[in-house]
Image (tube, rainbow, N blue to C red; front, top):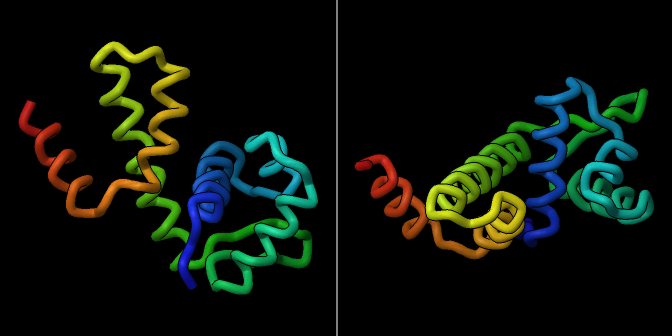
Length: 121
């Protein structure tokens, strides 16, 4: 299943909230992403069908191995671009928003080369 940017954002949100809270429910995602509960419900269903998420009997969300892998890659990119943009003087709030857009559109090759370049400093 090909993930769109929004699906990647949901997986990243689950990962971030798991790191912060331990357990995550759909309502936590809605608050974190500032989206409606029905939007989260639809996304969770789609991600569950794609094998990226599971839910337990208490309605907690859990990343599958596939979902964890995707979420970690997206989150790593997000952190990298946010840090780099702030380092060149971009306002942190703008850097965060721009990183969120860049993380989805840049190729793996370009990202790896930028990351390697960033490690040289």
